[in-house]
Length: 114
Length: 113
Image (cartoon, rainbow over all chains, first blue to last red; front, side, top):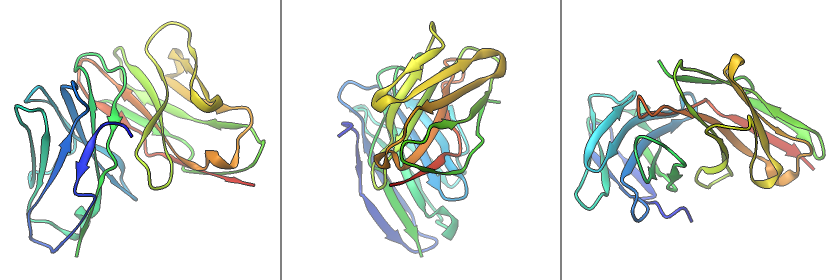
């Protein structure tokens, strides 16, 4: 158990819908990273938050957004869903932002868009 | 831009064979380097990491990796693999300047008993 909790574990939804994925980092970790893992794209970095602020952005679509709340949990919002958004979404947490000693990963949320 | 390339997408070995997985990264600044493993149905777990110092780092389960700065490489090795090493392996690079932790495409290792 990494200490990072992601909910839900599985999500099935229809095209055009909107979903929210939740991530609770390890106790004390201030940084949260979001990744999308698909068969053809590998593990793609989406976005990083540190203590409530966006700090780094990767290949995140405009239809996707995220935020980190004062209690440090983070949510990834995916809207206008397309079939191609079906993937495993991971979040990871780490204690700091400037120096990464290790990122701890959650079990992921498997999103299926039908 | 920061990027990571893993040369082998799918490797099949017999038990007791030696393993070497290639990883090259692209970034001109100071980086931290990682190898993660993802066993079937599980989350990514850290195998080993390199920040500075001895370029040969040892990790869990008998894995080691060598950082060669001139080649921008961080290859993973294990002298003798076991069936339980069957998993997907990811190389990753972190830059404090960009704040990004970028992963390679991953290598699926299948070890035959």
